[in-house]
Image 1 (spheres, helix red, strand yellow):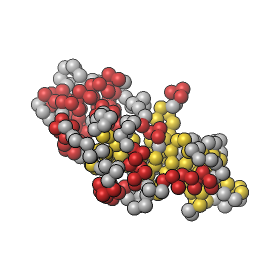
Image 2 (cartoon, one colour):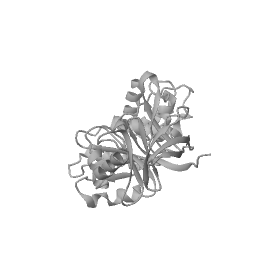
Image 3 (cartoon, helix red, strand yellow):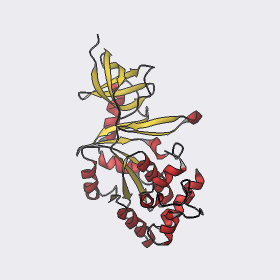
Image 4 (cartoon, rainbow, N blue to C red):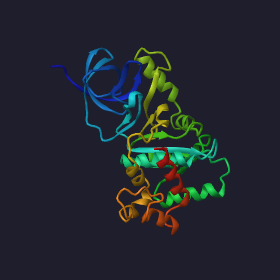
Length: 290
């Protein structure tokens, strides 16, 4: 019987999967009967040639982040994530609707979520500061950083230690600049993966896992900017707004939409100032979007 080794999936390369075992990168194929293997997965593999292997088994996941794919299927983006960091910035603009969508999904999937305000060299309006205070009041950690200022990253580096993290956020907020600042030799590492597995550069299309110099792992995934509301219900959406939770059971009707329903405790809480009006209005927009 072939000796099976445990490995960590660090990248998808065309049809191949880059798996790290004892610091060595092995290009693997996966058995067809296995579920879709994704970056962050722990697997059992067997060597079939030098630096080439076959994934024999997928080890149990503690979490999986998925997104809608073709034909209404759900495709895994990354596995075994501890923390999702939602990156946003004043420019192009603070899309709090998208931010609330991400947070609602994280709450429903039991992902720990934190916020990163990038481009702190730009001035913040009073209304944005008020929104940020509201998120902090709800218990979300906010890291204020500027990718161009290494010293601003110290607190974030501490938060990334000892866990697997992933960045998400709208286009243009500086996720790539931030990732490059945290992993100064990122291009070198990417080239090493490609060279070791006999693939040219730019073949990593989905996601890549990097070991951070200060500890912890960061999954860099261009496609993770779009994980939608497709697989959660309207009731789950309301549960994804943590300030709604004390009031949901107090609504007069079990199927309350928290809009114009009679006896809605959530709407009453908004009117009494216990729930932020802008957050509630964004909930309604997401509800309508579904």
